[in-house]
Length: 378
Image (spheres, rainbow, N blue to C red):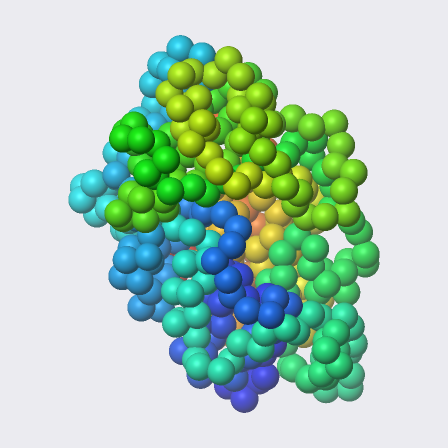
């Protein structure tokens, strides 16, 4: 691609900021448009496995991630009733060498603050919600809700499961509620009153699970996400307030160790889990103007801690393809051919919700390096 190509990235999430950082380093002019008015420390935690951290290392962000989050020492799977350890994965220097990077937990707000350092100053435009995307003779015209209009040669849709860029490519289609909701709570570890927990534990029930883990290297903040069945989601809101008692009631009968964690919960929200049918059309084909990454093209259920990982891998592969090929349409074909088989495997495993429940081959997932992995022939 010609280095004078103007690239607009829609969405300043994990995938959007990663692809912007790599493309700017390759010499492209890239601007990122984010609908939120600013980054803020709200939301939830996120797990960044080695296949993520080794990519972000290339943007000079690894030390910042570890400083803001926690380099986890373990992941434990336990039975909901007996507390039996079903599997345990140790993350130490040996595993870090094996996988090529650390296993990090971090607050999403802190993650955004680190990712922002990976892009050139003043290239993120906040309060820019895309409302219209129109092909012009030699460019794409973008219109935002604040009235601003810009033109770009390439538009990268990194705008999540409710992507407006996806709507342009595939037509409007609402995400599907999957029949499950997630309790989310972040609270000071001091509320555990000295009760010690592993860095990360997943409690596996017959039809629900709960995953408490630390968010900082000081181990002074805990995030607990609990996924439970739900017949419907009737609210127009993306989340609703909940309570500790509702959270506890949903995990009644679970082992006493989990009960002690949930007793410490404070400030609970309930989130619906949405999905989309698989669609392997990620770009506008021969036009070479519009392409998707992350949840905009392949939403992941949050059962494998892989949604952010896939967005980062997408970003690295897409930037490599745009750097390699003269024509963007050819770059998009290579990107799709490289990514779709791997993403399909991860979507399937996330859907099954079996990852690391027992002894698991993790090498194919954690050892993967999107910055050096072979690109598909096109």
